[in-house]
Length: 41
Image 1 (cartoon, one colour):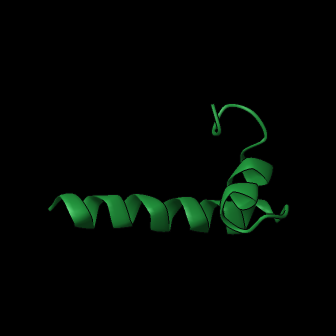
Image 2: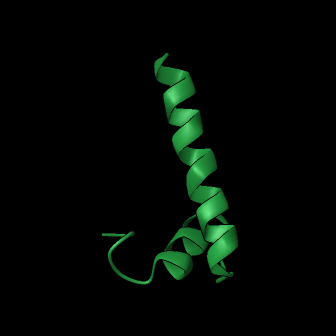
């Protein structure tokens, strides 16, 4: 649901507590996915 509706606002609100740009939101999401993959490996 976070990806479907207002991705930049939702991702930045989850991690930073405020809205940011699309680039920052994609970076946060990428780091999150990388951390999950690292933990599972």
